[in-house]
Amino acid sequence: MRNTFGRAFTISTFGESHGKGLGVIIDGCPAGVAIDEEFIRQEMQRRKPGQSKITTQRKEEDEIQILSGVFEGKSTGTPIAIVILNTDQKSKDYSHIADKFRPSHADFTYQEKFGVRDYRGGGRSSARETAARVAAGAVAKMLLKNYGVDIHAYVSQTGALKLEKPYQELDFSKTEENIVRCPDPEMAEKMIELIDEVRKSRDTIGGVVSCVAQGVPVGLGEPVFDRLHAALGHAMLSINAVKGFEYGSGFEGVSMRGSEHNDAFFMEGERVRTRTNHSGGIQGGISNGEDIYFRVAFKPVATIMKDQESVTEAGESTTVSGKGRHDPCVVPRAVPIVEAMCALVLADFLLLNRLSKL
Image 1 (tube, one colour):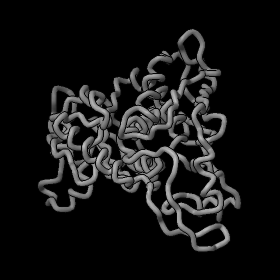
Image 2 (cartoon, rainbow, N blue to C red; image 1 turned 120 degrees about the horizontal axis):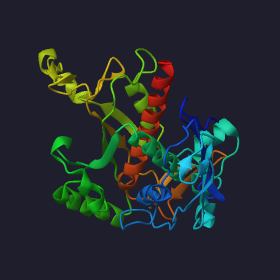
Image 3 (cartoon, one colour; image 1 turned 135 degrees about the vertical axis):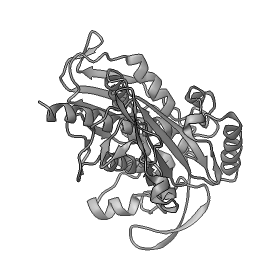
Image 4 (cartoon, rainbow, N blue to C red; image 1 turned 120 degrees about the vertical axis):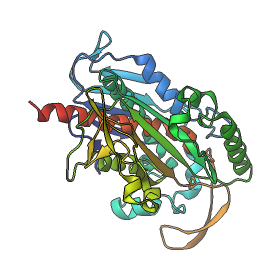
């Protein structure tokens, strides 16, 4: 089982949903990066469970402990180890599925691949693993800050409710002003009502998280297999419940003519710019200096509080009903996860680009 991501700025995560804790080891972070522990804690608060009526009611403060790699507020260039202890796991809530496969979960595939699985909350396959990614992503963001790179993610769709405004018309400072993390207040209220309605019906619903990376320098990415958008797609599709990734014009671009879709170049002072940005800030697999923007689709959470048909490990027919505490919609808490994975990719490619020019 591979648990490491990245090549120059690498992370290795560990831990299970109902184990003693989770953590991450960050390797390759240059020395001298200002490490603000309070900022890491703020990022963890955005992802933590139990933060509103439309998220799981599991109560985890997700307090971090930095064990190594930081001295007097700066990275030392050695591995940074961060641990997050579990405090509110209720393993007994999962005893009823100890030998049953939950529909659309990793229970069956884990059992077949490894011959053993931790059924408590899904073990390693649980989205709780992403707590470690958010901690690492916060460090990556602090590195990117030195390069003038900012990353903003937000909920742009919940079920059939879709925010049609382009991101250029949105005020990202409003994203954290509501519990669904949509920067449009009117749409946010509609989304909250929908998620709460679905929650009360003991069901779940999916959505889309959009993300914009601004200030990314020209030249990140490689022309063939290590294209920047391919790495971003890999990162996003590694997140639990993600079913799709598109960047730039995405699937809607197929309805356009080449004359409409091409991004014309012009000079802005001494800088080459594009008049449109259907390319999503990436051309030929390499960043072109324009905003990088993409969308990530999340399926409805697989655990529902209704009876579902299934089978046991012995192959016997059975019925499974969800118990415990689960999100009715994952996208509000997925916003910081998407930002974290984007930051990890960009930090990795920035360092790789620097190494390639030595």
